[in-house]
Length: 248
Image (cartoon, rainbow, N blue to C red; front, side, top):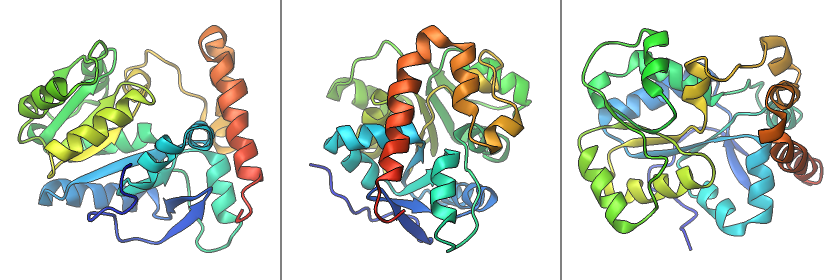
């Protein structure tokens, strides 16, 4: 079982949502904190939480424990933001994995960045006009989790202090957990299909749909065959989990 307490947990206000300590930092504050940690070599494992993740944590206690043991959990989902703001502790806004990744790619020394997975991360980097420099990229979608694979990746990415893992849930979380053990000075952020969105391979919902919590509908309309079960089962399962959370 994973320890639920991290020595490097971000020291910032949090609130409990469905048993998970969610940060109440604003997006620019999150970017500043992560940038500082990268520069200072403070190892950090981050979770960008949406309602699908909530649903999975409800079904899978081990997955919930993985998330609780993270150093920072931010709300990447409007229903989670609404649940937090109902408590009137501090007015927060959504911290999306896509925007956070874009900001960090622009701000962090590219020689400190590593990317594992994603269909074509280089396209996203080109569209962002990210700073030119050495950057380790690898498509690891076919990698099977094993000690040898984790050891090899840690060696390949040695010296990198910001590591994005775009392998999908739950695989990317397993990689993040294991690489954190082997790369204690790195900030590790699992970020799913972020690079596909940044590269324009997957359309992103209009801002107005994001702001009113209808991003799920946009995604379902654009990729019904691939996402129907994930949206209709996991998304609404997460909403039910939020509704039944006594603290919300």
